Image (cartoon, rainbow, N blue to C red):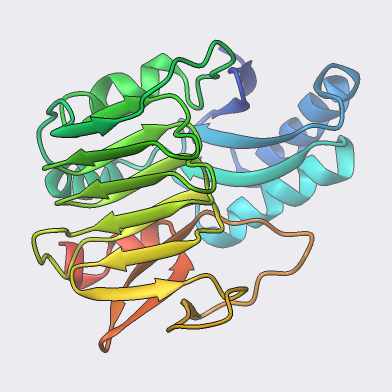
Length: 254
């Protein structure tokens, strides 16, 4: 294995970093690797998984800058393979089960895998997995936390007694903590829901005309920046925030 390695997946890339070299040398290697791969990567928007090295937020930002300076891809989200975060995630999500209810489910020959097999294999032992897009008119219900490997389109809905993790875009409706669990949350790589409900609290898209709207907490997202986001209950209201290690390490989930 080299100091920096790139691997492609269906909709993203895996960046493998040497854990021992100095960070200055690492940045130089990242810049060179993406410069060499510029024509191959093109101008696509994609997610990125970082392996092999635990990074501080400042270091991750420097790596993203090195990437943007040396190629034309748009990194929409970053997932770190952090052992601490992995343990928290594993302790929170629950055992897999098949859907309790599934309505108007249709096949989709154009479904794409959102994250690669290595990364979802461990998750299969921790939570229910739904593979594919949920289209308008479809509705699925789980009595466990659920990971959706696809998009939830406008007019589609998903309900879970636990939390909901959407490895794609959420543009329909999501209902987490359906049995009253106010610590449940809803996460999506692209977070633009029509409606989010957690336990007995409901919020709607900021673009809707009536009803309580989802509030933004802690950060302002510019037009050029896209972050994985999460909605949860805070002080009786549903708010959204950046999803990442800092969120998972909150005392609510330890």
